[in-house]
Amino acid sequence: MQSSDDNLLMAQRVGQLMERHAIPKSKQTGALAKTLGLSPAQAHRKMRGQSNWTYGELRDVAAAFNASITALLDPETSEHAQGVPALLDFGNHLVACQAWIGPEILTGQGSEYVAMSTAGSWRLYPTDMAPRGKKFVVELIEIRPKSLVPTRLTVAVVDDDGGSDAQGGLRTADTVCMYLNSKGYDARAFYSAAAFREALKQTVFDAYVVDWMLDHETAETALSEIRTSDNPDAPVFILTGQMQAGNVNESDIARAITAFDVDVLEKPARLPLLVAELNKRLAQR
Image (cartoon, rainbow, N blue to C red; front, side, top):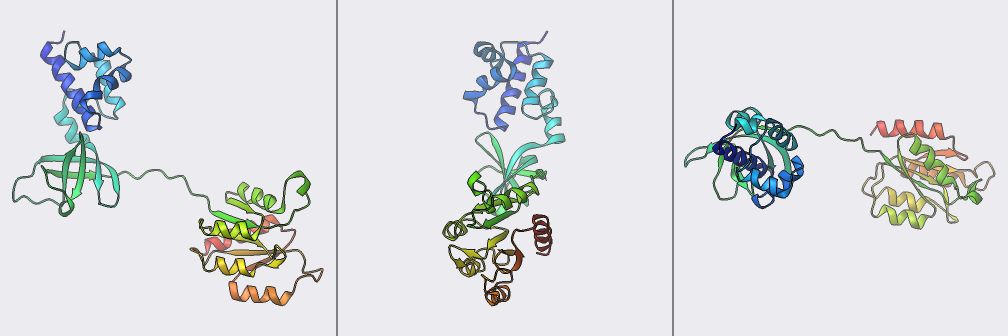
């Protein structure tokens, strides 16, 4: 059977654990009720030390805050063994970390980083960037890298051709995008030079697939804007289906190849070859 002193001590430690996770005292009763499935009255008695704490309850509270139960049963040992959640403040960005925090820093003591308690949580600063206030020694900082989902490379596909399935709503640009997306790219279709130019002002693309004839003019203006955009060295592939019919001036395309460093593919594009060329060009960057 626990004594009232033990109950109060456990309540204080639970409260301190919550404070380290930025839960103010005014909200701790509600947080405990939610964590343990208690009524507000039951949680209130727990937090005032008027009700016994079971091992299972302490274990569940610790688990809810990603802490070991020793953080409640033996907090001094636990804090030294596991550290506490903190934010490392570099001024222009914050980094989540675990920190092992020592005693208060006295006048004359030096430390590369210092810890300060702010609104119930710990914030770490390089010593020369720390604001005024009570500071503590930082014995160790642990930063664990997050698992990042690979970002898909973006490809702008610009083609105003209706395509063979235009009546069904599937245009040439849509067909190309569907295939590129199935191969891991984030391809986006544009059906006019104007729509593409507007998007180019706001979006940085990794590569471009552009029809040579856009809105009854060549793609040279669009190519010029690509080469002066935020990613001027991006691979560009020109599609044209009118060379064999003699409807395209080959000297114009040759000039574009030289001036804008583009590759030319005949339409209908052989999409596996397009992807292979895209992969190769992007890997060379």
